[in-house]
Amino acid sequence: MKRSPAEILREYGPFPNADKVHGVTYDGRHVWFAAGETLIAVDPESGNPVRTIEAAADAGTAFDGRYLFQIAEDRIHKIDPETGRVLSTIPAPGGGGDSGLAWAEGSLWVGQYRERKINQVDPETGEILRTIESERVVTGVTWTDGELWHGTWDGEESDIRRIDPETGEVLVQLDMPAGTGVSGLEADGNGRFLCGGGGSGTIRAVRRPTRGGAAGQKA
Amino acid sequence: MDSIITAAARALAAGDHLGALKRVALRDDPPALALRGIAMARLGDLDRARALLKSAARAFGPKEAVARARCVVAEAEIAFVSRDLGWAAKALGSARETLETHGDRVNATHARHLEVRRLLLTGRVAEAERMFSGIDGTALPPLSRAAHELIAAGLAIRRLRTQPAREALARAGRIAREADIPVLSAEVDRARLVLDTPAARLIAEGGERRLLLEEVEALFASGALVVDACRYAVRGGTVCVPLATRPVLFALARVLAEAWPADASREELLARTFRARHADDSHRARLRVEIGRLRAALRGLAGVEATRRGFALTPRAADGVVVLAPPMEEEHGGVLALLADGEAWSSSALALALGMSQRTVQRALEDLAAAGKVQAYGRGRARRWTTPPLPGFTTTLLLPGPLPSD
Image 1 (cartoon, each protein chain N blue to C red):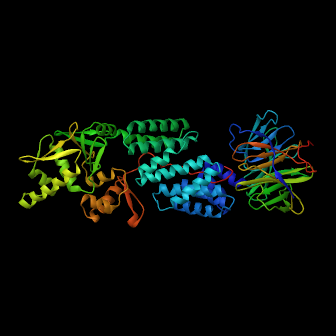
Image 2 (image 1 turned 90 degrees about the vertical axis):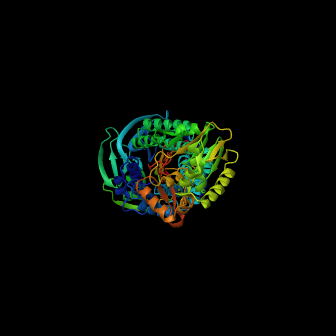
Image 3 (image 1 turned 60 degrees about the vertical axis):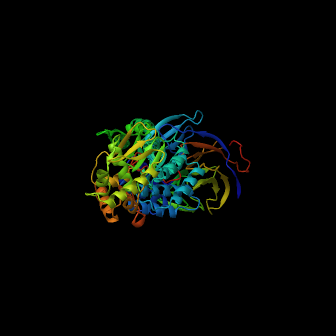
């Protein structure tokens, strides 16, 4: 297992009318985050909020290339980012103990916070296809370049780790500085992780190590 | 945090206590227990709230020190509001330190406020002032800032500094208005009432009138010799001779002060201090002894000289002699007078000071408590009595958020 300190490249926020960041995703143009009663889109260049959708947004956020998926209490809503309408709803696999959300390979991947699990879920039916055990509480979840990463936030310690999706074994671990937590995670496909900062109300961009282990190379 | 906990915390923040409870009612993990505890506190079930917060604090893991500390602070606040001061002050202190180390400034300050309020309630005013002066009240959220100003006002009133008290209350009122929190505005108004209600009666040269706290303050600063029947003490300038535990001496001083500048006759002194109807030689002998004791106690403030009729006060360098009495000479006035010093009294100490039986004092205290004029905390022999809340005793629960991601 490779372990190193997380390198924070940039911090977004705090944002007006949003004191907490619960989930983060990226649609290729904007960074979306869940702020409790709203989903807010932020321009990654300027760092300014550009759009707001009224929607219950309590935990993980994901984007499948066209639609947003958002955890609200014990459900996962599929939301049209153009209209803000909820198109369909499936039960969340953790029954409300759910935290992170990612979309990859036709499935939703849902972190279950205190259960220390990641569930692979059919986005149409909500059926649990598979469960990966992690050794730590799971906050954000993301897939990038075939790698499964998740955030952890156990009390005062937080890190971003890449795990083997078959065995749950930790392959890489990036330790967040003391006092900074990861409440949501998304890879922006551009060499960065976007990390929700929970109660700090910020989103932090963290350098993603490349497959060789040398950090900093842009994909 | 997970989704339901976030949703429940959101409901709680919006004042939807039942909505919060509904979401976490069936969950027993530590964040859910903590949220249930806070919701129950807001709904007024303080016993249940304490039990829930206690079990949440126990269940948080070793790495969740901040969450645990917040539970301890919330539990302490609930204990304080229910006037149960049996909880460990040490636990609150170390929870506060944990919050300080982890940079949770708002909740650390909240914990410190609780510590000050506890000291104030238990009559340790100097300690309370010391601790309060170490708090940086700026840059707190409105609710905490208003609480801060209310405590400042409470301390100032205890010290009879009415101008700073008024200023602190004005600041608290402004914050409450700006933040649009009606409960808080009402609390500030209640606190103002303390300053705008007569606090005492002035008896001098045959007449009497009511005094506001400000006028009492001015009186103490005036250089007059004040026989203070509100606190059972004699004051002159910066000198204060407490006579609370010497009721006969205080009664003599009061009769002499009411007669001043004339003397008081032996008959009147005997009648009002020993309740003696016919003065005989043994009474006269006792009077001489007690006057001798009073003379010794007041040395430096005033002399007590024998006249043909009886005795007269001769203040050293004072502008006159006055008596300061409670606003109403009501039933149990003596008990109220002693409690007016802001200290926490045991019923046995009150009985000793008043020369009454402990049972009589207890009956008086129960009457007064039923009328909302005094309050007790602690149980059994540790039970203590104080006068009703001063500013600084916010009845609004300000409970910290117990969740680390908050």
